Image 1 (cartoon, rainbow, N blue to C red):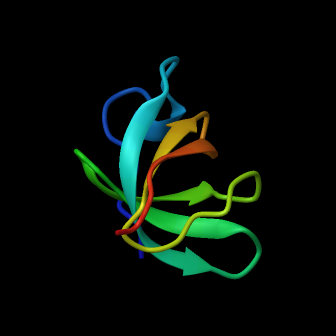
Image 2: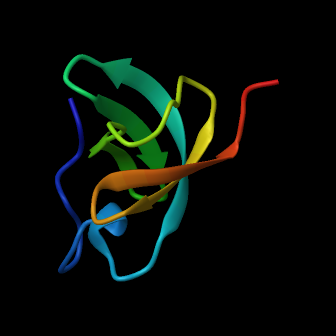
Length: 70
């Protein structure tokens, strides 16, 4: 289960791209990522990302893998 949004917007819905680590990939092109405010659900439909990788997220959409698994 993901944490509710904090402040006025979710960290991954802000106007800037945010680097977050993928914790879990779910069905339907979704993933749980770790943000500074706790876990959030985002779309990974545009990238090939898996657990442990760092993705750049903008508006709840992962747009790039910035750190692949070792």
